[in-house]
Length: 312
Image (cartoon, rainbow, N blue to C red):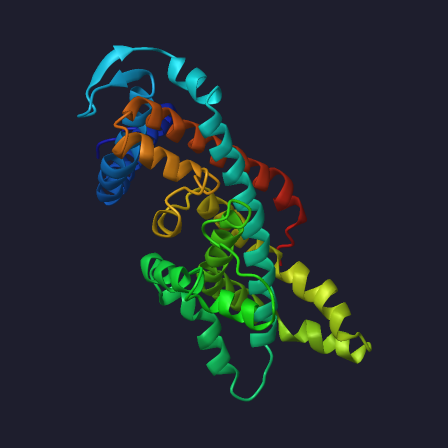
């Protein structure tokens, strides 16, 4: 009989490592093939536009958007010395300050009410979430009629009470607040549904244990509901901040940035520079600034807000 050939242990380990590397390579290729459609879509509709915007921000352009003169950081310098852009920046932050807390507080109040086990509560849940199914254009037309200086129901109601009519969309003191009110109403449906889903996911045994201990309704709300809802609140607040900075539709429909640039938010300012003034370089520079503002706000949210999030 022939003697069995003994393979040294080190060669066995080398063969095993080769097989393992080959398996990893095959798994990587399979994973990339599954991700390929998403990568292509993101590249076409996200990565390339971002890179193109950053590129255009360093140039002057003609009416067709073609680059003409390289100006470096001059577009950014001119932006921060422009009173119109500084006013736009101020209006944007005020708009975010008005809309985000207002939307969160009202939606949370409605969600807490809708989470109660009452007869016919399903009808009210449908009403509270109905704004989510209305387009920005349709909602803006609805609010345009409400804010009308003579035919609007709001002014008719004020006049019936003996007050003077208000130029909701024409008075610089009221225009931004009016657009903020309409935006809060438009965003209530989505925020309400997300918060209601978070409330319904809280374990009911926590409330039952608190009731046995004699806890009041507001104590349960403060010690159980809000901490258990904090992951959902964190998500909603972050998304609301991003959406507020990107607001465009209702501005275009209701005020077109007026009066006196009081409602000329950054996104609408970008639109005007690019598609009305044909200054694509300046518009791209504003878009880059907006990107970094949103990025900074999001990072601050994760840095400061996530510490108070209570995960079950």
